[in-house]
Length: 156
Image: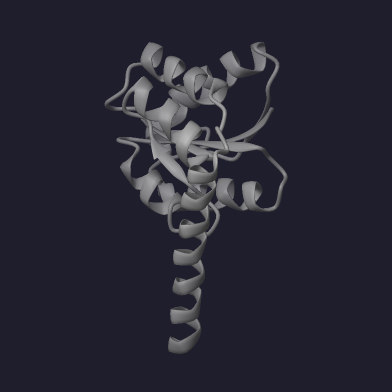
């Protein structure tokens, strides 16, 4: 799988460890995050990762900031992106199976590395179940996105 990984200054170490782990498992990683600890902003990296997904250049994305919240908020502003904040194994598994999430966000300050690696593996191993109910849910999400675009067009 080809995975884009982005991070702000808080997620440098976690990004490096996750990247090493996933490359060892045979995944191709695209690093769009910062590699130093100078203050920066999560929105910049969330936009880059979500653009790569929407352009079809990567299959999924992982975003890391201090808590995972900022990255989750930013990623979920982008049409066709369904980001889950990695808080526990059940949630990340269900998010993929039921909502076909394509971005996982993690908090470097509130998630230890071992747990982060488990969250990533669980999420990557999960598959969208594609039932009629789940497909309908995705179509409802798409309708919300289309409605938001129409609002933006009216106000511009």
